[in-house]
Length: 546
Image (tube, rainbow, N blue to C red):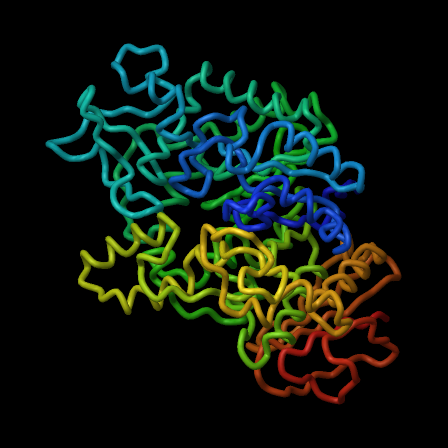
């Protein structure tokens, strides 16, 4: 049976540093801004902070293109600021999870600058270089960010692989010398006292090195079959454990796993030589068609519930799951899964109830605790995201109009999650005294921390209550999960039980009032309506204890 440990019981608060709090008026959030807000973070009842990448980077892809793994991005501050942040977190009993990108580097990293100089350079094999075929790339692999995953480099006339931006060449984990360098940089941060590592696209560090053509037009299928779950993946993770992680037994690892399936997930999670946890994307990709992010398709509540059940079943005996409904790579939680109009407050609270009552470690993205919503781009020029900009180039080639594409980008684009945090009702949202790097959402006057902190019926107050409930009832962390009402396309209901402690969670994912029988002898412990009703009201969330 799963053993008990801090990371399973943790609520993790994710910070996108660029958009959290700017301390020096340059319009960019920074580490000192995070330090200024630590008492706020602590007041939420969370246990750990996950920081998106803060390393030196040309910022082609929001810092996920690292040019120096051992330095802090100057606009975020200094290593001294980092050390102070870590100390201040630990003094408040909070842990720090760092985001490490080990699948690719920036093309401005010294390794790549050397690698492209000549075919015989000692760093050549730190990356994947291939001859083209008949004036075309080595194969037909598409990039996550549109176009080919191969880029021709004039110096040697060969192509290099980049599953993401052309400024993010993939690292060749087949090379033992590269792996040794990676282990050194991991050790650097762990020796500082970091408590956890979130390993970006870790599922792709072992690839099909025969580089066959993909035989499918479904992008998510290509990820599963060719980019992820490669032949040496278990070996690479096991080596990372033995060479680095086992020296730091208190450290938690969570792998980001596009392409991971419930069938192969446990390959990543062996207790002796695997990771502690993974992020899967079963629910996050369910509204994407064959074309990926900008090819939206309808989803059903039945499918949504099935994803949670399937993954809970996968982790029943071994491994551990993570529960999240949004992050820096997806639309805002309430705009995507809830109703960000009439039922904005109720549906935000409902989603918080789901997040904090499921089995698995809860990850909440900055601003979701106050119900921040999607933004609206009025032109592609307003987008700050390479994926949206490149997606538009592809759409234009297909003959789509800008208005058509904007509709999709405003539904699912990454800009939605990256607007600055809304601290106050002022125009700048209390984020920066300067010109913010990205415009704030227009609704900051209505949705902000200051307003909700003084309102005990607010989404923020409800988040704190739910966090307290989860913390004080072990069944909501370790208890068994039993889905009820499988067929109903509006109600999500389930039991959580540990020995004699039993809860029932009932969520109405609709704008309608519905009948739902509640067993007698159950007491309501929390809900997003103040009073008790004989019927389930729109977006009502209830937790009963037996």
